[in-house]
Image (tube, rainbow, N blue to C red; front, side, top):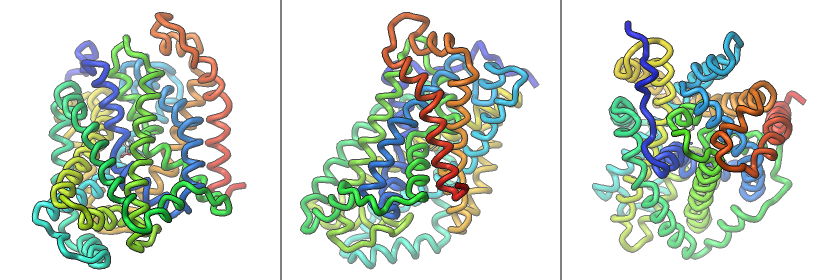
Length: 440
Ligand code: PHE
């Protein structure tokens, strides 16, 4: 079979396109579905503080490191490490990322499928006139039925179709317009949620830290959520970084993406928790939290039918721009390293994920194992190795060249960045790991 022709590699077309695609990867179910329920399970405000600390001190350096690796190597995660560290075992970090991509895609697409069901229910006004309790039962009944797997497969096909079309035509076009609209509608939902009687309790839960709630597990979950939400630690942003043109500023791209992702997560929290407390929904309702709370809010809103519809359309799109980025890791790896075509790689990757996802869809135990292992274990571990690579092994002058576009401008953040990747980030990740997993 013909070798991959690297001179014909695709790439992002515009500056806004890059930020939109990377933000599209970061913003998704991680912010709107996962963030509220892990906040709910881990005690609220104190978790949020730890989370924000990790986003800034670890998230930004890991994201920048991935961009640096991808853009200097112009390869998929495995190929990038092979190129930057020939003959060394660093490519295994890339391979671990590809493994994590399979796992994430399998359970994430299941949840994306749930959003399609909720979109369908919104179209047919399926939540109308139901009490919060009945809406809760609807979620449980739905999960126990055969429907999730159908929606999962439909979503997988959408993802595969767009990835097959490639970077400029498939991924970039899509994300540019829809992310800002999602932002607006979240604000509208927050306003409704905040004006419900009893909303104040929810705001207290989210923003008033109770430090007695902080345990090793809470800290570990906060770290995992930061990695998951920012799409870092598995080479998604090495892959996207490899499509970024040499003219773009990697530091500001990383800052913008991180900021957008964090703001969306916090607004999702403000949309959810006031309503959770106003309606007496248990904050630790696990994966069901958002799927129960949101329809309840829409039921209480003038124009709820319209907002519900619009919201679930946008949530599905936000999920799609994330699943695309995860599948792209697999496809870039297979098509560049295994010498198969993009189309064959997409089909092979999709079928494998479909098999794994079928298990995740039917068994909540499989779902939880994939969710925990990928987000809380593999991503931070990958992130640790990525910062150690940049901080201790890769040539500093090359890192500086990448962050200043060959000296075209000064980067005030270069020095702090090196300190972060050399010391703070690796030590913090390692400490949280050992502490959180009960090793010391
Ligand atoms: N960050 C995405 C979200 O929040 C999920 C994701 C994780 C995407 C890891 C890519 C890699 O929805």
